[in-house]
Image (cartoon, rainbow, N blue to C red; front, side, top):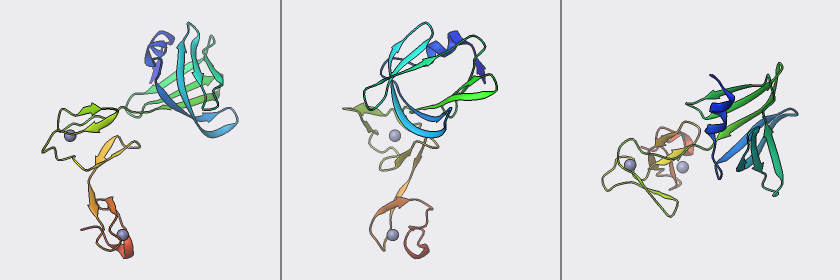
Length: 149
Ligand SMILES: [Zn+2]
Ligand SMILES: [Zn+2]
C-alpha cells in the first residue's frame, strides 16, 4: 500500500530494528537501527556503527505492507531500498509478558514452548524428534521422514 511521507515518518521510532533486504546494488541482508527521525526521513545505524541515511526526495514512493512489515522505497521506476521491520512478538492466546526482553506466556497458554517464527509471525508448536532428540517444528520432517509425532 502506498503511504504518504507524513505516515512514513511515523512508522519508525528511535531504537527500532529493521533489516535492509534490498538496495540499489541488489539483494542484501544488513541490519539497521533507527538512530534519529528527521524531517526528510531517518538516520540509521549500521552494525559497523556507521550512519545510513534514509532520505525521501520529492517524487519518491513509499510502499508499506502492514502484514509483513516490509517497507519499499521507490525512486523513479527503481527500488531504491527495501526494509523489513522486525516484528514484535505477541501471543494471540494469552496476555504474554516480556520479562527482560524474553517472551513469557501465561501458565497454560497453548503456545508455551512453541517457537516464534519471524517469517510468518506465528507460533510453531515444537515436538521432540524421537530419533535425534531435538525439538523440531510440528509437521516438519526430521530424521528419516519422522514427522515428530
Ligand atoms: Zn501465550
Ligand atoms: Zn530428528
